[in-house]
Image (cartoon, rainbow, N blue to C red; front, side):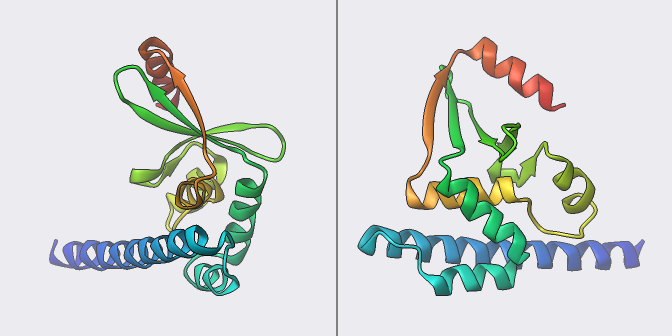
Length: 149
């Protein structure tokens, strides 16, 4: 039991540390983007050191393609939708680092990667103000949320 607690504690420390670094990088990205309208190469490199470089590149590509939509229900629930290169729409809950994509289910859940490109794309698009916004009714939001589970 004690060993399980130690392993869980170490896993939580790792999760907290990469999340803290990611938040700092996103804050820096947002500040630099607001000041000069560019995404600095050193921030991309730093993100590639925290996350898989392919994930970072694919996330930036999704942002460049304007593929991220913030869905807001009439009662204030928020969900994000990311449309992939093959026009597949993925549901994302970025605050809890969740995506419905296969990569998330096969790699992130099992601890091989911290994040998928869709969640990172939502974080990046939010930081640089590249989100589309769509209002939906509560019934539609409920149906979407039910499809996640």
